[in-house]
Image (cartoon, rainbow, N blue to C red):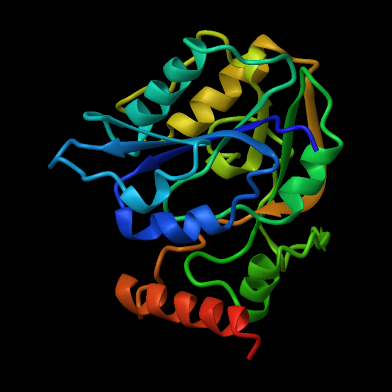
Length: 239
């Protein structure tokens, strides 16, 4: 497998990084760029991640919703050598990669924008789906009204979410996220599509989660993370 993916994660939830990291398959990844949001305070880098040479940790302050942090990462890529056919995936620090994404990447062709459907449900997903994630089962989930939160067929503002697109880096060029907009993901994705109107391919499959690590209102973040780690540890022990 030739590594051809750069993952960008704006980070203000340092406690989530280990779980986010566990969802990554580094045989596919060129770099995972974690951009710490230092707007309110200096964030100490997650030292335990530094042993992997594919992980780059930098910092950037200002803006909202991680937008300046994503721009900093894109600038970081622009200043380094990137081979043709390298894809960029934006993975927030309250989310993880769905196993089906690796299957899409296996068949991805250079110069394309791929979009797909997002799994329904905000916050803690059903335990059986969580077990699929930890086992990295490349499951094709049929897109139905019951399973899909948001379809990825339309690359327009308010119709697409950050995690629903896989973009060839060469198509991004000088396009950047608007730092002061909460809907900057839709603005950014729509602009890339507008500049390359014949490069988009929609895959009618669930291939991403929506806020996988965000706690539901009835549970605190600490309770959710404890539950996730307990399930993960039990699987490691084979129980």
